[in-house]
Length: 175
Image 1 (cartoon, rainbow, N blue to C red):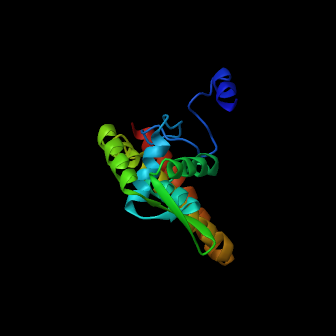
Image 2 (cartoon, rainbow, N blue to C red):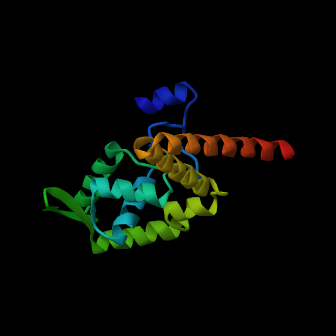
């Protein structure tokens, strides 16, 4: 139902809840089957539980795509039902591990696509992922200063941020 509503409102392919990746470094909808490829490829690297898989996918895409639990957990269960994954309880968490059948499927899907979803995105990225990562790191550092810095450090940070903003606008004006 949500897909129909988004399409009717003209928002097709642009969800703002962290779901989706359009392969060009921008938020968008994953193509049907891409979540399967991404999960198989990430679990081919090493086993993990659902939340771990979500975090690893977010890291691989420099924060551009954070799949929702509503898309990850059912797909993990489906892949397990199909024999491509197996799971076991470890420390109170269900940890998924790829089977030989799943490894073959992951290899086939990645070869057909020309790479993993994050490798394809990196080739088409044009620096968007690097930009997003730099902004995220700046935000983390700023939050640390605002949370634990003294008043003089907070004021200095604000001045640095203001100066950076002005320099960016100056750069744009030069063109």
